[in-house]
Length: 140
Image 1 (cartoon, rainbow, N blue to C red):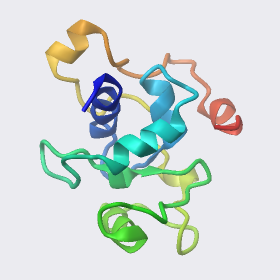
Image 2 (tube, rainbow, N blue to C red):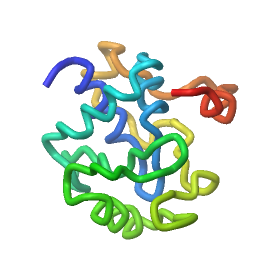
Image 3 (tube, one colour):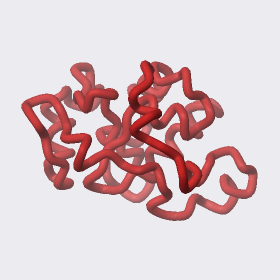
Image 4 (cartoon, rainbow, N blue to C red):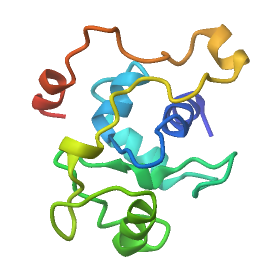
């Protein structure tokens, strides 16, 4: 795939069930804060969508306003919503996740594979005092 996509997939694998992250949030966690659109391209090219152990749960990535993706590549927005609802993600309307309840704080849900961690390619999470509200208020 490529180094950028590999980093994106590693971060997305860490989003816990019942939580979502935004494209911009994932971009910041891989060290490319201005590449939210490229995170979307990576999600569209996801070789292992779903919930399995090796899967990249791209359905857990949403727009900064909580909207699910109209062009969700693996069954459309209905499939994305269904997968999220099955994990307990709540919605404020038909197409928007309740970010107040379901936004992932970016902390590691599990430890990354030691080879990735040892190379230092993917941050384990933001610093303790990181202000997600301020970050998410910026245009992505």
